[in-house]
Length: 216
Image 1: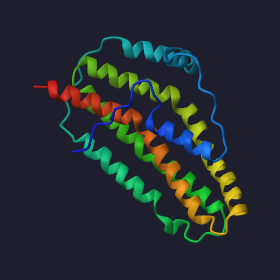
Image 2: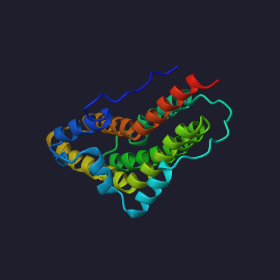
Image 3: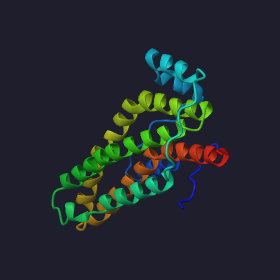
Image 4: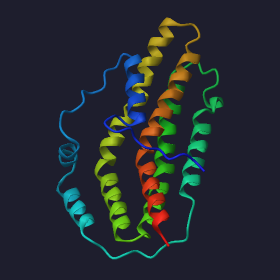
């Protein structure tokens, strides 16, 4: 079975840290970290509809019916493997003379991640709801956070292919074999982004595993 993923206390998520390091190598400065606390950032990012949904999610609810047991860890690890294989399919950009092919591959993989991750996140929430009111509340909170942050996350991550294109232009001007380092950095960017996108799913899985241990 896969290893449990835990975010180091007091630090950035691994994917966020890796992305920041890559952007620094590209000569791009990510936005300065906000001095606001996490609660203040959440409040700033949510509009009034999100606040209402959050308040509703925090209300005690009835226990949901327990679903058939399902191996969420195996499903999450399988998703990672399949996405990594798709990232590394170099036939899609083999010997491409135009950097636009790499940018297109990046954008296509982002769409694939979004399409594959969302259903699994929902499935994890459904499973978590079956372990009583407290677990159902956690699942409801995750649904609220996903809705609240989806547009902001999409806007931020959608800028990465354009950043890659600028990096490609720089490498192409400096190196004869620009495709090799560009491909390597593209893989690093995709893997870091995947790690970032999966943070919520690892959190749901950890909660699911914890509640499963306490279940009769």
